[in-house]
Amino acid sequence: MKTAGRLTHRVAGQVDRSKCAVRNCWEQWTREVTRSTLRTDVGVAIVPQTISRHLAEANLKSKRPFCALPLTPEHRQLRLQWCQARSMWNVTDWQKVVFSDESRFVLGTDDNRVRVWRRPEHVWDKLKRQMPSCHSVHDLELAVQDLWAHLPQDIIRCLINSMPDRVAACIAAGGGPTRY
Image (tube, rainbow, N blue to C red):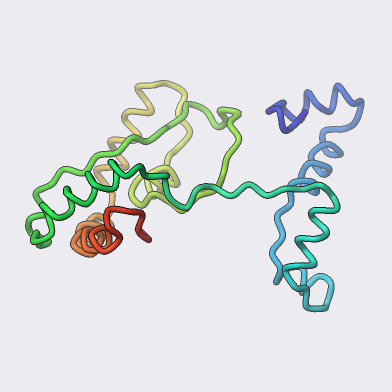
């Protein structure tokens, strides 16, 4: 029921248990553990194969997000051409570019979506972490504009300074995925 996005108090009512019991059960079920945490808890070193075997026995599978978007040969060629056209640019050239991206902001606190944790997307991640709870579109717009106006420029400068390296990495990868 919780995996379907139902609220804790609704699940508690349906299974005739307290909210606390449902919450504790859910937290135990969804708890994430690392190998080093297990080693500390159990007191012995555990090899990855043992963990994999036990997870398979419990019929548990992991979901791993794509490390990179799948690129068609045409995508690779277009990326390579784009980077080659800008391979001689320096930081001053990159400072003249307007970088834009789509980002999702939600009114309230929960939109009932299942999340897959990925690496932060730099600037937007920084903004979202500081975002206050908003109850109207107008409040949301004002909050985003205020956070954007007060965003430390060293974050932006660092990303712009990395552009020549990003372009070089894409060229070295033949237009394919890079570590960026």
